[in-house]
Length: 401
Image 1 (spheres, helix red, strand yellow):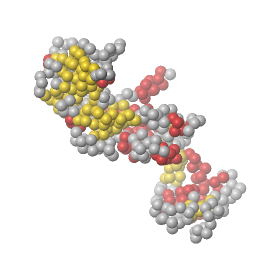
Image 2: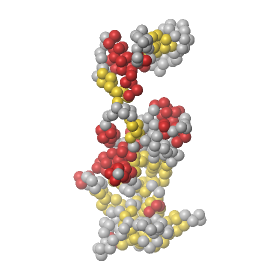
Image 3: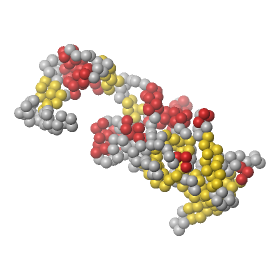
Image 4: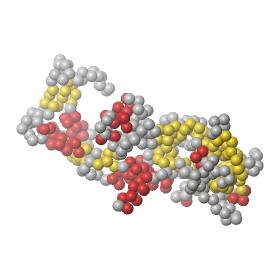
């Protein structure tokens, strides 16, 4: 076998233990198999390779692993793990088994993840939709949040599927306390404030993080032309829509009250620009006469806006447990798991932000500067998680029951 005299699969080397053992793994298990294949480290030097059960305990022993943590399917293999260590008289780690972590709306099987990568369904192992460490890192998941999530779900001896909403909830909890706030308009609509003096600019005070008083404030520039989110305006506002519409007044975050006086459409009937009036007495967001507005929207000064691409990532699969379905798991891939918005407008404080930095775009969610594609002058942000917290609703429903 070692000299390469036999073809693949023609012979194996087995351990002589006990063919009558009630544990199938102890019935003279295979130690080595023949495989004529080039190895990424040793090239063609070897044509025999150890089986997993034989190499497992020895690898742990060589590396002086004290506790070898395995999933439940290794429980029946533990007697063989211990048998090899005992008869080889080597350092003895302790194997401990626990239930595998399973999350809804994803797969954690390495074989299935490999299919996604090789099939081009994702951009690679570090695709921000992938449940790999490199994917989670690039997505912007804070390591502390992942550890807190694992602490919350604990260690069990029974297989279960954990709702990914709990992981998202944990991330929101942590980032709400730590992530600085900025204003970013991902689907911009141009607004001209007609009674604001042309050429005039001013700086307004904005809070960096209301959950952290020590985070301080920053200056945000304001001018005659601004961008707001397209979804914050309706030509014919429905009931309980408290944002901008014809004749309606809203508050610009940290700035002024504005009232929509008109709008312009293109040849396709799409609204391309709003015309508004502002109330100079409402600087900072409050009216001296005490009048109230129901809507507060974010904005970015057009003169000072920083262009960026924003990638809105969502769950990779459209069903909770794609592996349990009858059809091929790839049939349940979510076609809307990635939406790329190339023409976003951000406040100028984000111009020099470093890759990997995590921030909150007010009213939009938590985002991370992409560590792979983002460059100075070509910013790319990945959405870590939206602001909406479905886990709170789940908790409330459970309490109601």
